[in-house]
Length: 449
Image 1: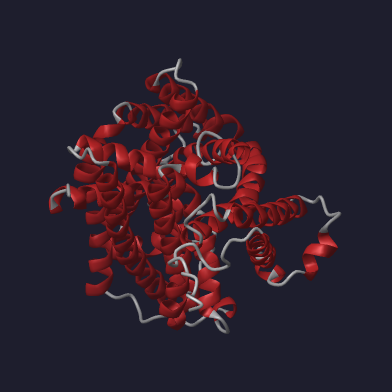
Image 2 (image 1 turned 135 degrees about the horizontal axis):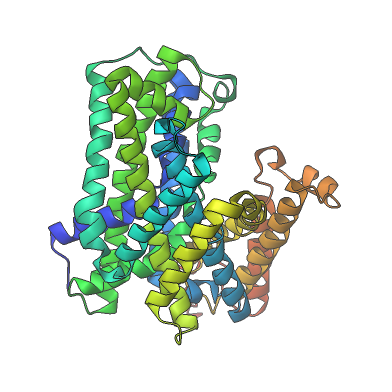
């Protein structure tokens, strides 16, 4: 069987890590540490389940299914088309790509503006530079391992390591006290914070680019590419775990020294100022810039590759230019408005993405267990759409949602999802199919003799 060398496998794992690790991933763990205090590590276990476990399972599920469209097609071809399109648009030009520029501008540029140039003008100039770099790097998606894995990601990890080592060698304090939100159920709170990163949706998209880069390294067998994609996903998950743990420790120490902060960016800002003074702000700016640029490059590549397959007359480079240009406009003109639309869409499709991934492991034979997929995704989708409408002020179903289990945690979709699985299994049983998970072996009929 074909296998990547250890060096190339590590490079692909670093590339996948860099595509996951954006500004939100940089902010959540330090804020968790600052707020959880002495309960940091219990909360981090819960955080790791949803912020690392679910995304890596997503990469594996898509790799085994042969793509997101094939995975979603286990429900219905029409669902696959709509669901896949919504995912690529919502985490692409309609939300995540513009946010990479606006977030990195806020952290990397605004602290250094001295009033000689207007913030709006500075943001336009910065966004043009940012998206030009991202576009040029994304033009060759099969070379991302060389550019992200070999160059940008090692620089990012080195800067984070310097910050972590500085925090160890020059501790500002011990861990702080535990805030009220983390006192009683730190694991559950950490689980919910990891859920909010929504990296599981991104995981459904990144598999196509990782597979492309593995092919560029000489792999030809589809089964080998799938196995190497899974191995790269495990490596990326391990790196994420180490980086999240380091950032959570930094946050816990910062909380002990300076008290609670409003967000993770402020937490990091306080620590780098304490450790390195003004030079620390430059280092933090570089960390945010590289993290956001990596994610932007990965998203432009994934979205362009997908739209090139459904509209091949428009080439990959043209799609990459379109996404970079549209994201540039949105980042400077209409990001807040687009967030009002995109975030509810994300909230509506995110639970379905999680359920789809879990079903792919529990019921591997999509044709045999299609009723399970249909019933579970249908009930999950209806509930999550109602949740999104409720969150934006459309409340006809508010009373029903309030009565569902886990409503207070915004996880009311779980019970309908489980109910859908049960209903689907009953339908399968009535059709004469066995009623156990598809991953189990067939039960042989007993010989009456």
